[in-house]
Amino acid sequence: MERLQTLIKENGISKYRLAKDLHIAESTVRSWIKGISNPREQQMNKLAAYFRVPAAWIRYGDPHYAPSYIDDVQRISEKLEQFGRANPEKLKHKIKLFEMLLEEDQFSKEHITIYPKAKRTRRKSAA
Image (cartoon, rainbow, N blue to C red; front, side, top):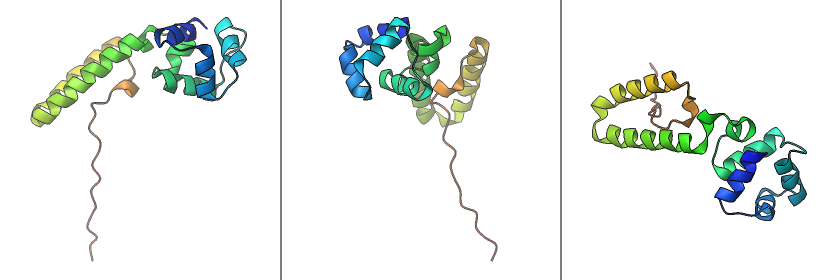
């Protein structure tokens, strides 16, 4: 698995360190890298969380999920969030524009953090 090898090198860690941090055998990591076996879903999710990249990128290599692409989207998302705090009345227009750009590029919304969290309101019961 070439992408896993790339992540290990880019993060400057050893196969031993990765195995120890994920509580798996080093031979398992080596077999993944050599393509002898593939991580199961749970292990793939641990790898993705460890390296902070989508599991789909590790498994399939989809360029839309490549770390640099995600970093760009998250950076834009953070800028929009800052803009929204300063200009809340204009934020929905910026989000709409960003959504259109994402649709054009067919990127998943799971990587976007700009969506305001829904506020829960308590309804007063009619007594």
